[in-house]
Length: 269
Image (cartoon, rainbow, N blue to C red; front, side, top):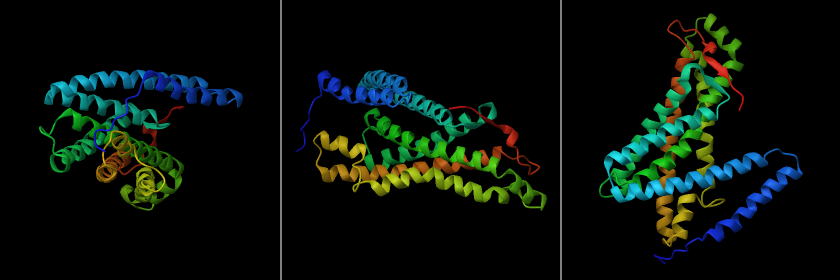
């Protein structure tokens, strides 16, 4: 079975785009107002994936630790921006971006390097053919957990402001007063990856496994890789969400144990 590979033509992609036109037609017919967004998203998908394909082709040929590192850094910086773009309640002064990017860098970097040096073990370990796709999967899933966790914490602290301040007046430390809401934010951030793990194999065939099978890899081997990836994603999301939520909670307080919701701002999505 190994070696079976079906090459797609531009005609195949054009046929698939008919489904996008159908979605746009439904938007017009039902007055959803999403046809423009669908068109822009489709254009961005096509341009971005085409460009990244060309960039990856060059990186795969060079196998340079410098260029691999620069590409990884660019991915992390863009992922941090994506986190803040998904939030309607943010920290002022660029703190949301700084916290999200730091969490992505730490969690994504640690788990990706761990996978490359222990389970996958390419030669060299920084081979971009392995390092960048792995990091991309870690970032793509972790940014959702971080975004959800940070926004849930900010929104909850804002909603429960009176209850928290009442506890502070009674002498509770701010850390204890906000602890239940930190736990709630962490649970919210981890729900997406838990759902993905629960559905894998029964409801959905995850992307990496599907891609390998389509490329001709034996299904039992594809399953091993997918299990590895799911475990890595769970670890990265947990670590990233924990760092981001705790850092956000700390930023929304001060050394006098006051709740500093004035450091938040709401922006329309």
